[in-house]
Length: 61
Image 1 (cartoon, one colour):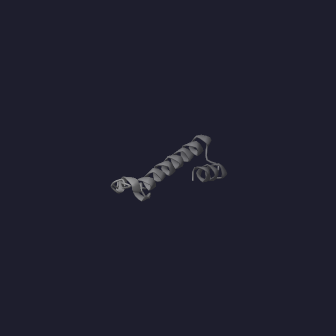
Image 2 (tube, one colour):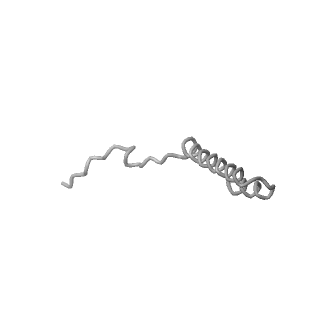
Image 3 (cartoon, one colour):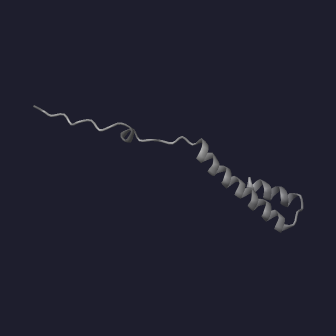
């Protein structure tokens, strides 16, 4: 997304400072969206050994 914003700014003839600012803002939005995605939509993996109680060891008599 940041590269697209930079390319569009350069091709449209915008000054270099605005190009970099747009690219930086697009980068920040993408980083924030990635973190939000992982917080709300990522499946949290729980190890099965933590969720089940330990069984008593078998005695061999």
